[in-house]
Length: 395
Ligand SMILES: [Fe+2]
Image (cartoon, rainbow, N blue to C red; front, side, top):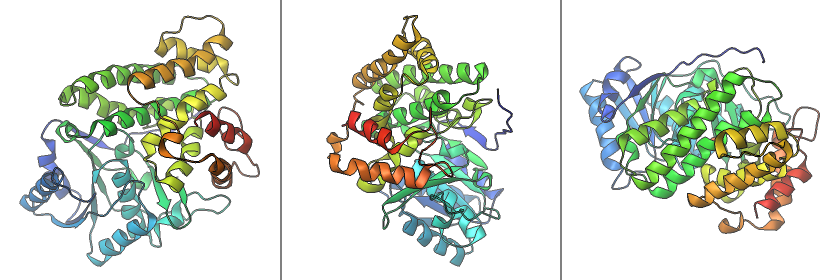
């Protein structure tokens, strides 16, 4: 088991209708908020209005920025930062999914620390700029998926250079997350489905890539995977069930909070391999994970059969005693599950051409290689050629 330092810094405010309390929550954190969100449509506009009314009732001024897109673009976030500074805001309220919350983190910390949001992301050999602090953030997730609502991570896309990358900073951990499951009941089914796969991908990244052992983290992760699978099935039958939405919200948060990896922190190879799908083809992150996870599990089963087999047995009903055989059954079982839930998706489904695989693999290595190597961290050091093989299996 590895040494670690971990705490959970976000206050969770959970319950149907809790959105209406945002004004009271915000009052304790700032005087003038930027409400960062997606472009309003007919369904979403009343939600934005509810936030604005609650803030007004609590005496908190608000500037609304509704331009954050899926796979948030660096130039959009820089525009928000300019407005945030010009308006002298002192608080960010992130109302949306992972893209909005990630973008809001860059708004809050870059406004405080200076420069462009892109200065702070991991990018090959360059040393990313470091924040000196951040304005407080309230996250209001409108979907259970990214876990961003309570953690330090954040992903950005640079549309000009076709790069997508990330950074982590404790300064950007939201102070409060308002978890109102009513906000999740009107999501389109495809978003709910893809989101459950994103949660699954978070739960298995560290589980499968660490050399350290932590039975606590294993059992916690396995419990969350089983709970996710139960509630994924339930939400497909009844998308309006608030308790089910609440359970998925907890899987999202604690599946990517670090608690799922206590004592055996690993790496995030599947996420690295997904990044170019979003950067080049604007694939939604969670959808991209659905494309990458099964082939990754298939291709690397022989590297750590003990880990693969344990997951297969404890979460996917595999009873085979031989580790090598059980390990190879994991991708089969996961594919069956994806198929049942309508989430078996290939690169071809989104017209991602095979002649791009090499460029995408090049990007992964260029941006995320371990220092002094041509490999990224994963279940083993992963080469460009192996990433191409994963894409081929995802074809
Ligand atoms: Fe993810």
